Length: 194
Figure 1 (cartoon, one colour):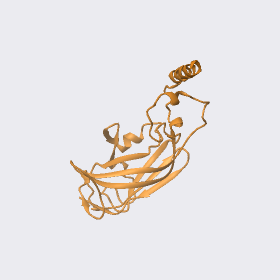
Figure 2: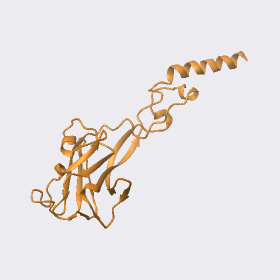
Figure 3: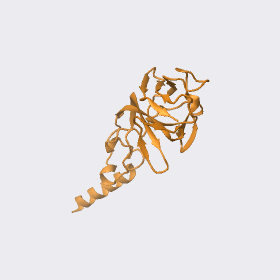
Figure 4: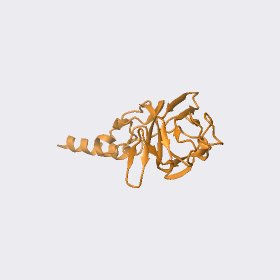
């Protein structure tokens, strides 16, 4: 009986001193803390006051357009440091995959179109001054967002168009350039923007 009580006390003490941020860091909870970008894809949606719906082959008002750039990522662990009995004694909050981020930095994001956007932005010109990004629950210009250095490469970006195009048909090409000399590309379907 004394051995069982001693064992319970030992587990409690080890758990108490080891169940801190580092013991709840996700590695020991099977949640890989880091991610590595391996590709890009995009989703175009119509945002209204009450809903978010995918856009297929229909016309959309520019102020309702949502362009989400999603990185295809691989999640990974780093070397584990020793044994920790803390999680055996106490429950720790699980962390989302990739919560510690990546070592890759976003160097640039270039958005072009297969069509003229307006007189100042002919086919193939950089359109990043025409988009805003949702950052810390605020819409800021994509140009301002990209000027923050160093800028960790995001798993996704939520972009909004700031101006109506003079040419309705638009097909956007997005190029992401990382500090690791990696380049990733994605292209939207052709959409009509009014």
